[in-house]
Image (cartoon, rainbow, N blue to C red):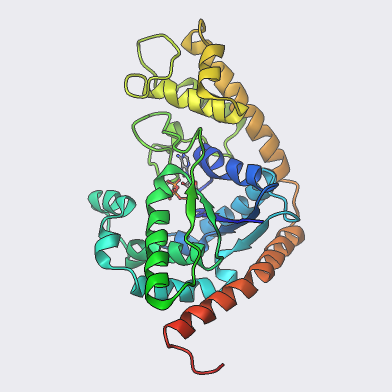
Length: 328
Ligand code: AQP
């Protein structure tokens, strides 16, 4: 069975973009692939955090992993820091990655351009992500559109290592959802829906939003004055985004979604999107409440125990090839 690896960094509450771009594809893959998903708590601390908030966000993320349908009997779920080998391989990967490549990373450039003070951990996080992926020898990495460049970096590093030190890593491929790989902000559809969006009160539907709040956000989503529900990203980005959300949740194609709303006005269309989103949130929130602490901990324990042997073997293989080991 081919392997998949992916993670989410709960720097804030998970949102509809995370669900459509990442969580839903993970769940759809678990019948066909050996799916491994982790909670990227090291990546979380690349930006300033509040420890209490982080605790809540980590636990919520895990509950949502389970609530969306990730089944610990089929998939492996673990916390990044429970597998120490990942951080160690991360340091090795940072030594094998030219700074020029990190300087080209769009996420880094975008954050740098905001003028906020960035940690060196934020700058090197794509090299940790390289380790996150390569340590599992996974073939596929399901990600949203924004993370594709980081998977390319992992591919480059794997190829470079294999050429220089002999065949070691599987060169992974990004898997991007056909519909919904980039859900946009509801208040500014030129921007990605993002946890760190300062306009989260309007632009981001969080999986924990009350149904009333979520519905209000969808009904107030920025649209245009054209008045026809059609998929035109350039001239009607808000409507295109709502169509994408609707199609992704209903698991239909964009043309199918468009044809459902051919003669419908924006108000009616938004209501239909809000109904879909609220139906999803209602189910997820109910399940989210239903897991007790002991169960949550057992899922993480089993996940880390399952992943660790491969991680240890790969790290050892890499260190041996680099001539770093003494004890056999
Ligand atoms: N808007 C989105 N549409 C589709 N997919 C998305 N993803 C994130 N936002 C969208 C995908 O979700 C997975 C987990 O992402 P992440 O939380 O680890 O990091 P991120 O991509 O940096 O997400 P955010 O919300 O934008 O976080 P902040 O604001 O903290 O930087 C990934 O597969 C991602 O592509």
